[in-house]
Image 1 (cartoon, rainbow, N blue to C red):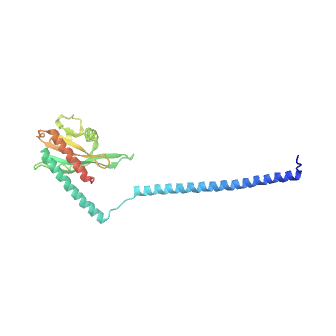
Image 2 (cartoon, one colour; image 1 turned 180 degrees about the vertical axis):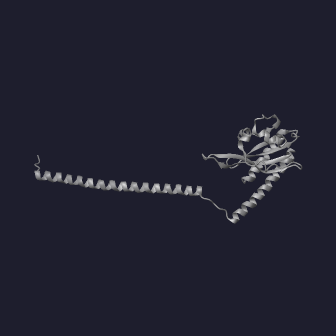
Length: 237
């Protein structure tokens, strides 16, 4: 048996106690260092997130005032587009032997107290046969509810043919059409080629007469073709 003196035991105990104290001190230092690192990383990530959101908000709410050069370019492009669109409408007018051919676009221009938009449609381009009046100026900012039934068909990608005299008297669009002496009206939906959204329609009508076409389905196909062509002009496809 080894004889260990009390002095030796005491020394060993003090050594372990000293080591324990050292470990506690080092652990506190390490813990504080880790806490500081985590805190700095959190502050950095939060700062980057806030800066990103601020930039997004600035972009969303920033107002870009076009330069004179940009306005001139946009004006020239608008004039060119209108010429191409009206040429296509003239082509449709002849092929369908219609009295009017026109482009209609949907838009919103007013907001109610809750922030909800009111939707309208307006004729932006139209061509007519000689002796037939242009009604583009009168068909501006018409509330969308007037053509609710047509919108339902358009959203399905379907064209719509209307004979106003056969419509119910309580349908809002009946009065609008009969006031123009329209006997037959036909329109096909126009979609944004970039995202597939319904943006308007191309239509033709016959005043005081019905369509003289022998093959009405063929005529509708022509309307669809020209509608797609006009959409391509508007969205650079």
